[in-house]
Image 1: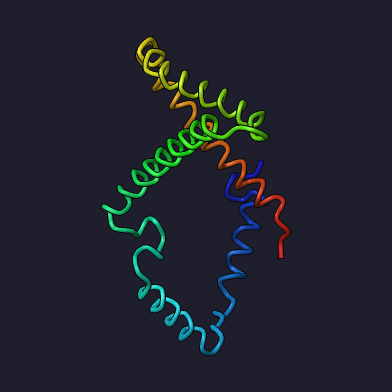
Image 2: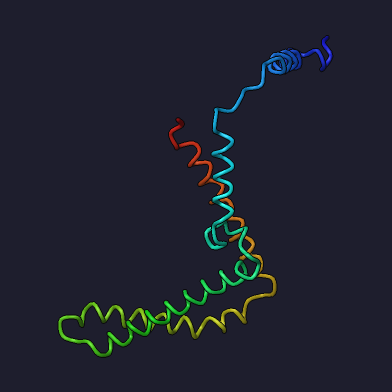
Length: 156
């Protein structure tokens, strides 16, 4: 019976490790270090908004999602009001398509009025559970997308 240290896998690992350790170090191509240093220096000169989000100032990282949510709400409100205005003031050949827009605006307004009542009637902890499940599903989707990308992307 062989000990775990003398298993074929262990012997192969030691053999490969020894062979790789005996290899000479490879030298970088001429001028490579200068190109890398120039690329690092040029990235350091970029303004903060052109760098990665994680390197933005804290105030900008906090304000960015708030501004995005505000712009989303503003755009949604503007579109609903535009659709309501168009449904009310435009007629003639546009009436049939605008009838659908009017019904959509009415349904959205009704949902907006019902939302606080529905939220108030939910049991405690239910909303947090749903939010937690949504986060887990989002992370799973992100992970599966990354796996699919790595699997399906042609390797060069």
